[in-house]
Image 1 (cartoon, rainbow, N blue to C red):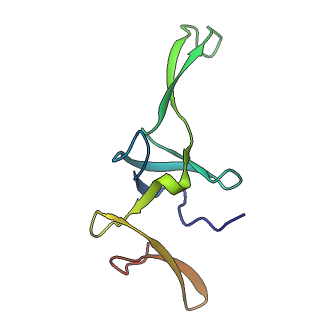
Image 2: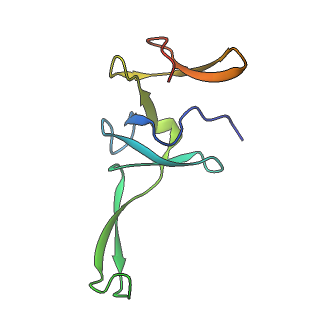
Amino acid sequence: MIKLKIKSGDIVRVIAGDHKGAEGKVLSVDREKNKAIVEGVNLVSKHTKPSAKNPQGGIVKKEAPIQISNISLIDPKTKETTRVGVRVEGDKKVRFSKKSNQVL
């Protein structure tokens, strides 16, 4: 299993695939499959039967996982995509943006 540098709550941009250019917040990360669910990106239609939870039934839009290699973190300072590095400050590891050298 590889070390992932993208975490839940990060703002990312899709850099490859059908949804290239779309931005959103990471809702969850699956470390086993190297995939992430990004809010508002890679929406799929799911047909649901009427139930107690959803009495109307019908078509529901939901986010599907997207490959980690197809998304890039957005630097909060420059608002551009950036790579992420890890360094030790004191006794803690912190993530930082390679473009602005700012701690994330």
